[in-house]
Amino acid sequence: MRMILFTCLILGCVMTVQSQENMDQAGITKALLNYVEGFYEGDTTKLIASLKPSLYKIGYWKNEKTGIYDFDGKMTYTQAIAYARNVAIKKNFAKADASKKVIVLDVHDQTAVGKVTAWWGIDYVLLSREGDHWMIEEVLWEGPALKK
Image 1: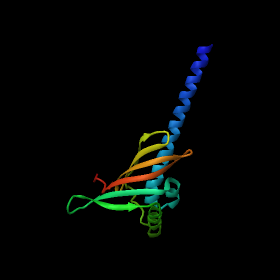
Image 2: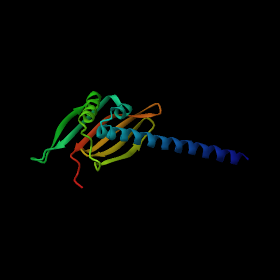
Image 3: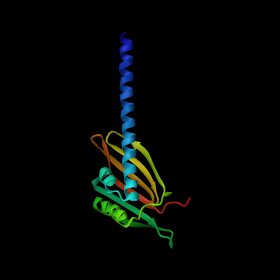
């Protein structure tokens, strides 16, 4: 009887951990999709839902003439929201066939890392947990995207 109770307890713990991992994967994936779709669709609501106000985003763009990557500056939370708002105002949406791939690379209790492939290139994204919600803290990106 004790062995059955012990086995049930262990299985319950394993199932709880697995359930939490699935919830984390889903939450991180949602934050990454909100990020790329927010820029693609000009949807500030999606960005607000997944970006921390302390966002720090920096990137590098390959100079076509020299072939060298140049620092392309940094983007703050306020600038990200303004960029998306401008996409919506100008109706400068991403093309229907634009790359939009998100991958969860690593998950821990409080932090995670993901990768976003978008029309502009590759973004490596650091996230943190806010209660049961995942938020984007930092982004390091490189563009342009590789040609298909």
